[in-house]
Image 1 (cartoon, rainbow, N blue to C red):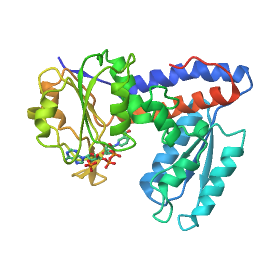
Image 2 (tube, protein in one colour):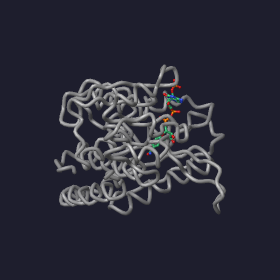
Image 3 (cartoon, rainbow, N blue to C red):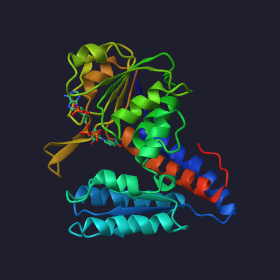
Image 4 (tube, rainbow, N blue to C red):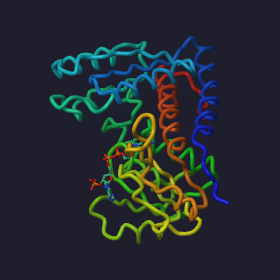
Amino acid sequence: MTDIIDGNAVAADVRDGLGDAIDTLADADVTPSLATVLMSDDPASETYVSMKQDDCEEVGIDAIDIELDPDAPAEELYDTIDDLNDDPEVDGILVQMPVPDHVDDRAVLRRIDPLKDVDGFHPENVGRLVAGNARYKPCTPHGVQKLLAAADVETDGADAVVVGRSDIVGKPMANLFVQKDEYGNATTTVCHSRTEDLAAKTRAADIVVAAAGVPEMIDGDMLSEGVTVVDVGINRVDADTEKGYELVGDVEYESAKEKAGAITPVPGGVGPMTRAMLLWNTVKAASLQHDVPVDLP
Ligand code: NDP
């Protein structure tokens, strides 16, 4: 029997657990707050931001919605970040990526106060994660860790293969797997577009995390019996549906499910966890900045 890892259920547990931490903060007159900054008229980015705002409101986090004209000068975004950095009422800041071409995205990430960087992308937070002293783990790989823990998948001593080396998923995922801690201690291989014989790598893995953004590129033939498969990919492919498309992962689900001991579906796997872990980081940000200790789930 393959264990289908239910990301919606695990995310709901995380949100429930955060409720206790939010109550503890409320006892100290603190309401966590997240400012989202959108400088784009891309419908997907607008949807992501509004989902994040809704998630916040659902658990009792104040959501501050800032929208900037995509044609505005970069300085307007920098000034907005500076104001949010200085505002004691703001615990977390998230600038929705991608920003317009005339804005340097690395400069944006560096500008955010590391204590308010709930995405965990500021170089200081990246460095802390690599050094094994993470403050804010990036939401998607952190969510994957939580999923694996919830499914009782042991990482200690496991051979983990991460397909993808982006700054937001692949690299932090690999960095978490190699840490000498409860959810790490995996022997970790990072694959990318220059990897030769990817199938040989994935076949040798106990855990495969697919984050390449290539629809259904990993199928059952590329996996060994009993492997745990975490599919991060979210890809739109043309389909005969009302919307004209459907969402598929980087894993060819049906054939992979035949081999896997445990697998995450798309949708309903990693996606809900990414959203939940943003709330987690925001609550942690409030706890750190207001000096109110909380138990995080
Ligand atoms: P990027 O495009 O930034 O990175 C993709 C990575 O995959 C790159 O490192 C690339 O290699 C590698 N890659 C591409 N093609 C291949 C291939 N054929 N074989 C091996 N490696 C390959 O993507 P992201 O990391 O931002 O996102 C990856 C996927 O995850 C996307 O589908 C995205 O939508 C999804 N996503 C889902 C989230 C969720 O919450 N579920 C959150 C974030 C992303 P190279 O570096 O050599 O170019």
